[in-house]
Image 1 (tube, rainbow, N blue to C red):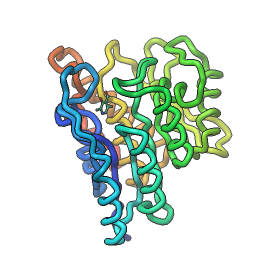
Image 2 (cartoon, rainbow, N blue to C red):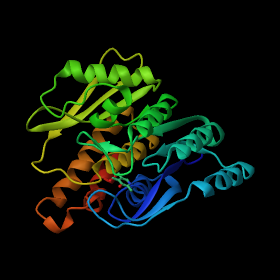
Image 3 (spheres, rainbow, N blue to C red):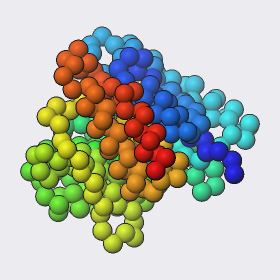
Length: 280
Ligand code: PXL
C-alpha cells in the first residue's frame, strides 16, 4: 500500500512556533510525508510581536496548484490553518476539488481567533467566509471562540454547560462539516479537553486532561497538526483527538516557568511522547 501524503496550507511565521513551523515537523514525526503550501511569510506571528513583516503569497497559489495538477499530484488529506485573505479561502476550496485523492480528507482548522477575540487583521466578514470553508470540510477543528464567531452563537469564556457545547457542535455540523473536533472545552476549573462528534454518532465524545494555570501560544496549531498526523497514520477520530491533546499538554508543561518563551510552546520536547503514542 502506498504511504500517505498530506498537504498543509498555512503561513510561515519564521519565528514563533506556529503554523508551518509546527505542522511540518509534527506531521512528519507521525511518519507522514508532508507537503506544504505557504499562504504568506511573516517575520513572526502576530500574537504579541509588533512590527512584523507580512508577504502575502496569494498570487503564487494558482500556479502551484496548476503545476501539481499537471503532474497528477494528489494528497490523502489537505489540512488548512491560518489563511491570509478571503481570496485564499476561495483558492483552498478549489484545491479541495482538484488535489484531494479519492476518499481523501479535507481538514480545516479555522485558525483566526482565541479567547473571545479575532487575531490581528481579521474581521467578522473573514469569519463568515471561513464558515463556508468549514461547510465543505470533512473535519473541522475550531476552538470555542472560532466556533461561536462562525455560527453566530454567543461566546462564553467560562462557566458554560454541556448544553452550550452541544449547541455549538450542532451549529458547526449545520454548516456542513461531517466531523467536529472542538478544542478548549472545560466544565471544571482544573480540567481542559476536546469534544468530538461525527454525524450519525449517538453522542459527543469528550476527553479531558489537567488544565494548567497558564496557557501557551500556538497550541491550536500544535493540536491540529498532531490530530492530522495521528488520524492519517490510521488512528480513529476519537483516538487522534486524545493523542493530540496529551501531546499538546506535554509541550505546554515543557514550556511552563520559562517567561522568555511567552511566544510559543516547546512541542519539540514532547515529540517522543507523540511517536510512542502512535506505536500503541
Ligand atoms: O497560531 C495561529 C497563528 C498562525 N499564524 C499567524 C498568527 C497566528 C496566531 O497569532 O499570528 C501569522
